[in-house]
Image (cartoon, rainbow, N blue to C red; front, side, top):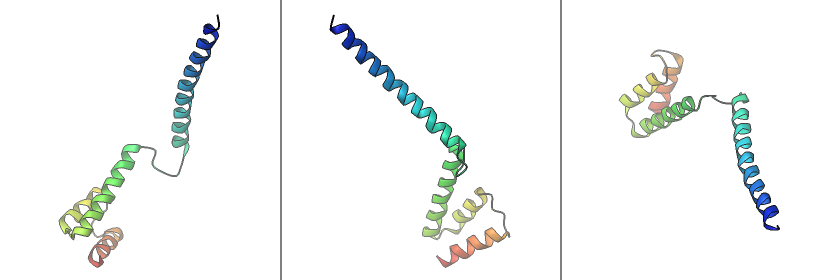
Length: 93
């Protein structure tokens, strides 16, 4: 008879811990969605990080062709102020 309550207690702990994890995951996801501090789409966030790392790598290697391609992928148009500022930074590095 003493084994039955212990089994129920262990079972209840296991169920509550799995539910707690699920609840915490949902809470985290909702907080992330509600946050206005960053991109809501993780794929977009990954793309931005990749562009930034590619750009940094191109600057360090002094590879003008790769740097130009990174700027185009980032959506920066030629002859725009952003394009000119990027090239100033590239040439001074």
